[in-house]
Image (cartoon, rainbow, N blue to C red; front, side, top):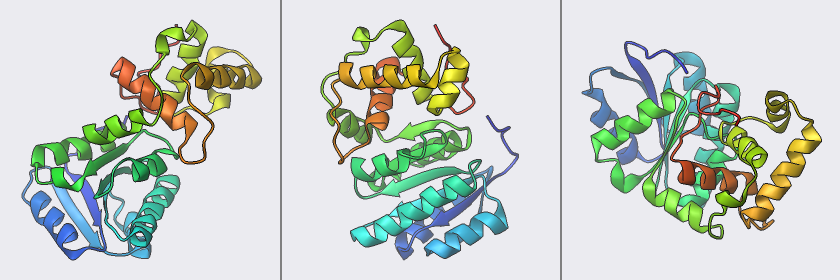
Length: 235
């Protein structure tokens, strides 16, 4: 988890003027927050990440869908190129875009619906949480994502399956989970297949099974996992 900076540097990216300037004005007067750039395009977002080295990127995603997908693509590319930058997405839409963002990992991600942005405390919580490597999701988004699966069956999982699922929730790849648990990668893959079956998560293209399983785990345990593994303890 990164050490808290004296001043947290923020870049705001949105092709909507009101969203971009509104967020800028909202955060500009906050002690400990410095808005270092406001940008309105995909290339400018990536350039700002390189030039300003922000701690957190706030991305506004609005309809129409083509604009939303472009903004989401920029956020995902930035997370790949700059994994230490927290990303907070503010969107009109709910769970669909959240799933797309979480596919590249849940650590250091905030996702809020735009009708909650006026609540400064909620926005700051997401910004600081994303910078700390936490996962901060709007409650209504969590509920919608969880409803995509059938009822939870965590109590049906074996101890080893719970260990594997905890590793998934901490953002680890299968080979990393295998090393941590001192088992083969194939064994981890078998456990994951069993987890999907026991949680009754169908193999459907419209959502990511791994993300759905992790959300079920987070909801059941109340944990917000981080990539450093601080919340993952093998049983």
